[in-house]
Length: 131
Ligand SMILES: [Zn+2]
Image (cartoon, rainbow, N blue to C red; front, top):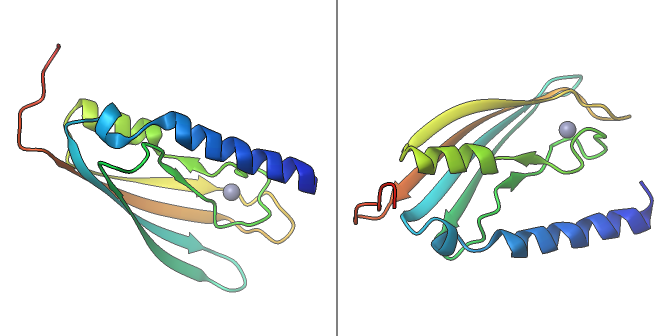
């Protein structure tokens, strides 16, 4: 990837984030979303990272997590949790755990395992079912 392409990709991502809209608009029943991530990188040096992402109703409905492998060719884009979050909201699930894996397809990258836990707080008022 050239420098120029990288810049374009970054701009595109900013645009995508704008396009995603606000959580309050897309998911008015949601009061907050917390994503706890645990990165485990195996290899010569084991890297163990904890990261918490918090989204409020004023945040963009854009749930993307960057890959720990900086030169990874597979996920320059990061991991998308949009589908996971959308499905949870549809079913009014309050918490869900899962795993993501990256093969680490780069020069210095290693296999990365990410366990995540998504916790969603809903507003008190009942959602309009089937409206
Ligand atoms: Zn990756």
